Length: 456
Ligand code: UD1
Ligand code: MG
Image 1 (tube, rainbow, N blue to C red):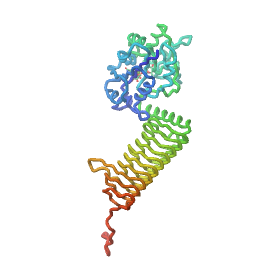
Image 2 (cartoon, rainbow, N blue to C red):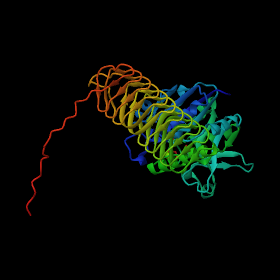
Image 3 (cartoon, helix red, strand yellow):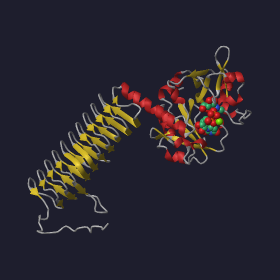
């Protein structure tokens, strides 16, 4: 009873997307639609996940994250019943099979769990719609029990009045499903093998048919066009924004936030407009994110303020830091507590310890920087010789004067002061002033070249 297989239908051409990419690979919230479905299916701990893809859709197996999924091609495409049938040889005879759709990306675990709890027999996910056009209708008998599903194109006038529709998602005992699929015929308006015809077969055999409604209607919305994808994207972003608001996050405008992955927030987090969060992002308590920041796969500790237009990627930011505006933290950046990173400072693959500051116009790459270090404006770590990368080590309490180049590999020892405008190519002694600078000279009586004055 508890064994579950999942079949994900993803063979449709998606003609209306007007794209060379298979429909189910188009991204919603930064992730391929079918990946959302696979990820949701994984939560059911299925024995088997079978993705049915169509001709020309070879990119589907290539682009999905590795999972225990099996990929089956459906060619030609003779209808939803035919599609599910392609997966059957890969499924054991025990337990139940859940049918999901690669272009219905927002189905949620709670709804699927509810379907699992509905009882033995066949369970259909249905919704009541004010405008049921295009959907298969759920036909019920006088007792209110489901008797069959009729496709709109095959429906009578009276049946078209029915508001309860088939979402397509269903859960069936696998042995029955196998026999029902084998009995499907194409004697309908579209000449297809309709998956929905198994409902009438179940009823005939006295197998109970249950219906379950999704927790939210958006869970069952399918995507056939870029326009529907854009609408569903906004729906999902509103859901994310509401979730954050309920948790106590302050959003300057819930309509101007994009979460493309998972955003976990502590208490009293504030997020200004236009921010994008990608991958796995964790914000500690009292973190403030200024307008138009892009934060990807990052952890930002309590009390840190990120000023507007900063980009943070694959980085760890400690507590009470001040970052930006216009700062760029690239992969491998690790900042300890109370570090300040100012405008037009780029940091990559570097660790900066407690209370150090790089406030203006610098590049820090492949560096290890100690505590209480001051990096003057315009400082550059020259980490690359055209072929190899080298590290720069700056120990505690160093003061680097403005416009300094640190040619790696080089170590600036504890307490060093570097005079402004220096090019440092050798390790410096601790506690001393080191500088490399041509002597200032004055050329007396030197004349600045003059432009010829144009005659009128
Ligand atoms: C189907 C249902 C209908 C339901 C509607 C919900 C049937 C016969 N009808 O209708 O009751 O209300 O979905 O949206 O099942 N697919 C394949 N291979 C095929 C055909 C379809 O993989 O040969 C996939 C499509 O990619 C799509 C899904 O199955 O993801 C549904 O196919 P579609 O043709 O859109 O079904 P509908 O006619 O809308
Ligand atoms: Mg169809």
